[in-house]
Length: 316
Ligand SMILES: [Mg+2]
Image 1 (cartoon, rainbow, N blue to C red):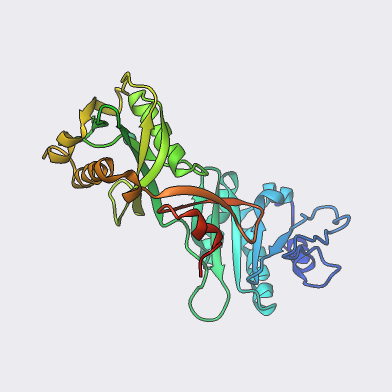
Image 2: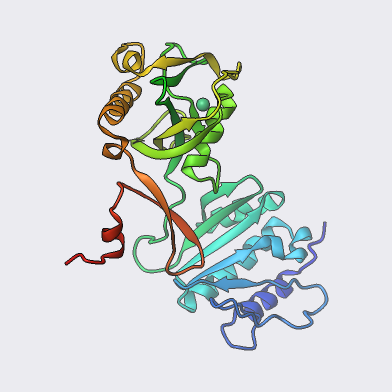
């Protein structure tokens, strides 16, 4: 099929769009956009955004005219654009390619672009244009798993499961992988409910394990966090797909049994210590604080801080 945009047209549009002058269709880091007015018939309205590090982001999803552009024409256009960005002193190019335009990945790769990351419906490629080795940040380095140590203080029982798909059946706390945008405590409560049918609420964070080259982490590192939860339902209805067994076990028995993983054993002993000496000895509690540079909030976990230290009133 004939490309919608000829090489000459493509080149003209690139030159116009990426020229840094105020009249060019250039979108600055502040979000201000000098958009191209009335693009000539047969050209696409190509927009790049400049970030605060001097890099350019190009989102192919916004370029309707690319629908009928072939890979070879795209490669030529991209090559010319890269040359221009280099001459303008840009530090990097971020190329966002929707999955249905994946035919543009190979041409970009042949110009030196590499994958930065991919999500379900798009991939992002980068090309470092600055001096020396690339200073672009990598993508996610860890997956995050969260388990709930659901402890009933009135009976001294703790909720434990055995995984179904394991070669060796050992007692452990129910848990699973955190979903994007999910608070740690919410993951623990959700996973406990999905795997055991027990309803609970978040109390504190007890431990963090970091493990590299975990076989289930798609080549990433694994961060495994165990939370202390308080149950408010007690009838077990466990997930047959994931669990082989599920029961309320005396905390002393879990702390002493050999049929468990080292991390479960250690946290059972930590809980026993907290149960006897006070949970303030082991708990990292959570508080929400405002971020300085955005209007967002975040969760901060640490050992309980006395109020007078929080306010610094009367502290010298
Ligand atoms: Mg699980």
